[in-house]
Image 1: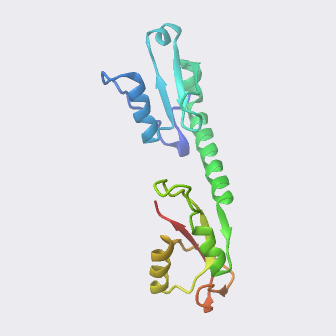
Image 2: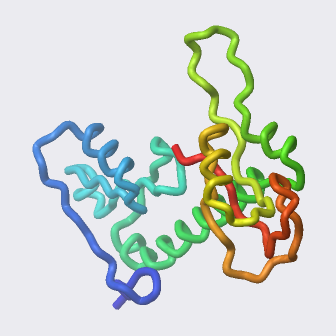
Image 3: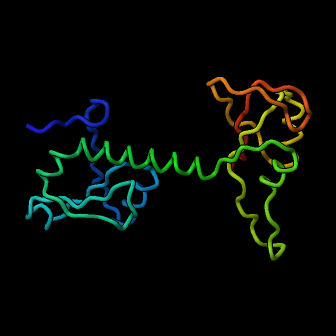
Length: 182
């Protein structure tokens, strides 16, 4: 009998959405909730002993039909694959959007939004994550927040290299992660 255990040996949990609601609305609600696998089973699928599935790590319209037995036998591996794909995507995003910054001018330039063409255009999301030395002064952090809407988001647990705070010139034990909160 195939394992019904998912990631880390936990049982696979299932929710049957039997509401009398349009299918597209149900699908979108579950996508917004971030479920890893969405199954759609209609009369034709039951006749074919199959399921129609969508995965969180794929585009919403990228769905596939699969034999029910094949799905049940492979659901644990599929969940692990989804986890691995999303984790790698997050690591790549973090790497692509993180910059090591050593000067105040570079820091302000990184987090200052570019000008918009029209006054009523929305401000584009700009910046990302900045690894910058910081002396830990709460007043300085409040000033930077007022200037740029940026705060310290994380202080890494790993020991870091000592350096100099680019805002004050004072010693800093390690770099911290700065970012905007949306």
